[in-house]
Image (cartoon, rainbow, N blue to C red; front, top):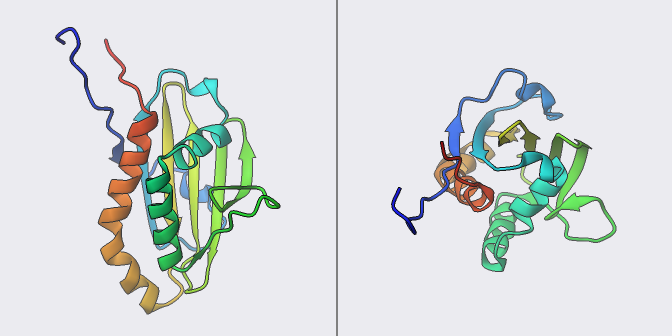
Length: 163
């Protein structure tokens, strides 16, 4: 690589690893995805701190876009300081290596976000349940935007791993 050259960190979409879906509390999962991003020191932050860095550390305009999109999808996110949440998503379970966030839905599309630390990367997954045909039809055209947003959010915290 040339001196001074920069490379862009890429969050790679992967097939959700075995056992990832079992972390969900939704009962039934109708949509799931998973992404990995390389980071220099995953153990520098807990899984919850990484999730906060990814979501709450995003630029204000991006946070506003996320909150607006989630609201349009009927997700109930609350920025109240009285609850234990990350950018409005309730923390359902957490330990140093794992955090699962959840949001109920006004329209019948509850969702969860998962982050798991590994040796040299972070795994980020999304789970969505469709309780009716309307939300299934609503979600389908949103998927490409969702994927792009997750990749952009993760790329912000990623770092190049050089040989």
